[in-house]
Amino acid sequence: MKSFISLLKDARLIIETCFETQPGDAVTILADADHMAEAEALAAAAHAIDAKPVIFNVTSMATLAKIHPAMPADPPKHMAAAMTNSDVIIIEVELEYAHRLAHTEAVRDSCRANAKIASIEDGMGEWGLTREDVLAIEERTKKLIEATRDAKWVHVTAPGGTDVTLSIEGRPPLKCTPIKKRGEMMNPIPLWGEVAWGPVEDKTEGKIVIDGYMCGIGLVGSLPKPIEWTMKNGRAVNISGDENAEKLKTVLSKSDENANVVGEFAIGTSPFEGFGTPSEQGKLGTVHFALGDNLSYPGGRNKSKTHFDGTVRNVTIEVDGRLIIKDGKIVI
Image (cartoon, rainbow, N blue to C red; front, side, top):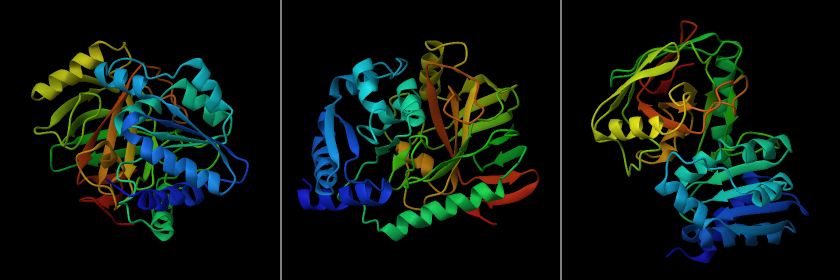
């Protein structure tokens, strides 16, 4: 068991560096039973700087979401009201449930209400991160945003067989880093980094081979065999692979007619993430694509009950013909 002192050290990084929490801030912490010790450390760190923390126990909702992956993750109205009246919102639950929560109206409303919001990655008390590490992720992410400014087309290839072209014309990027500002989209912290887009809905063509982690199918660890998406006019018109591909098709079939539309393209920017968990999506050298809802991204128009991500490893990326990443390494 981790000591409270080690938890508190990392909790201070979250409260003071990542959220830049101020005295008097209303801090809402959503936590399940498995993460209550971490939630209490976060509350203690917030209290120590005279913020006003409150912990909500969301174990029942997190459990139901795990049992029913196609079920919407929207929180009840009284919890949503607490979120929209908070300055800082911290999601301390199993990461895949937190990821689904990120694509709900309650979270979007909280961002519109100018809150700072993020989920917390596993390993608190063992991260070993410094403020300088966190700031380095921020700067690397900004560098990629600048390199893709006003871009129209992205071409992604990878050794696993991915060869896909998508349009991001008129779709501004989202910066998802450990430093949270008011009104920014929710993402995991403090290891995570990414640049994300909601691609033009009907202009993704080619083959996406998910060979890392796949959300929404109850997977533990990396995919044992890849899942291939055949993309035509922005939709996954065919999904093939082993039993995990069949699970994904089943979950999508229980959602809605927009569940197979490309919902996200994102480039990982953090060297600190590992493989085989939802956090892989933020790892430098990977990209992830999602099927489903994209309303959390600037310009996104595809409304769906679900949003499921899959990662592609060791990618090469060209933006309007300019090489920016080769074999997983930034070359700009």
